[in-house]
Image (cartoon, rainbow, N blue to C red; front, side, top):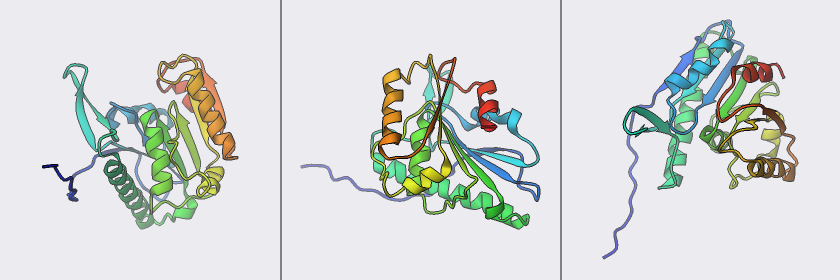
Length: 225
């Protein structure tokens, strides 16, 4: 007898962290997706130097947590290859809900969506997560000033690029990577260059002298680009 797979939707609690708060002074919102094995509580610390009264930074955390480094600490992941379709659907729905709540909060402060610039920022595994959210999400509305920053990760190959070409062109994507990144090889970078070029989407590539991590001086520099 062969086992039959089933699915059931359940309610669970997701966690996210913020720097700043929704207020009438808010003009910019960052959604920052962490990488594999990280926690949002620590990931958001990379953005402390960017936080101010006009900028709200929101760092959601992957829905699955696990022990890493021989049980010495806990990390989170956005998904694995096991039951991947369901995991993608779950985190897209979660990020959609978070997006809606952030802008409902701003609306109560008298700040309409069209007056706010969004920066979609993603690191490592968060890059594929962010790209899938942008293409599969049902709540996101983008404006001409919005931006997409992809750091040390790859866009998913299965995306419907033609259908979402206008979206990505409007977000003016920026791809950031270290020249000593142990996970992002020169070959991987070239594949990303070819992927964006193939679909006629201008993506700027920024290389820095460093490894697979967010460098503060580079982060501050690209914010001004």
